[in-house]
Image (cartoon, one colour):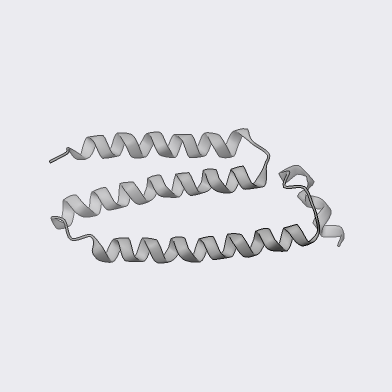
Length: 101
């Protein structure tokens, strides 16, 4: 059995990559993908704690996480399609022009 410390270290490393991706870039799509990476790290951490505390019964937790992830993906696709109607740049600093429309 793999110790929980390994999962914690991997989860922390993935979360750090996601936060750095959000902080460094100005592109909206890259920021959303970085946020998804951070959420994947949080999911790994939650699944690890749930697995070790319930002795392997994590099916309900995973079902809840997958449901939230699917709803988030649908929302992001709808938002991206809305932004693409206006032919705007995906640069976050230029999104203030949407207020004028």
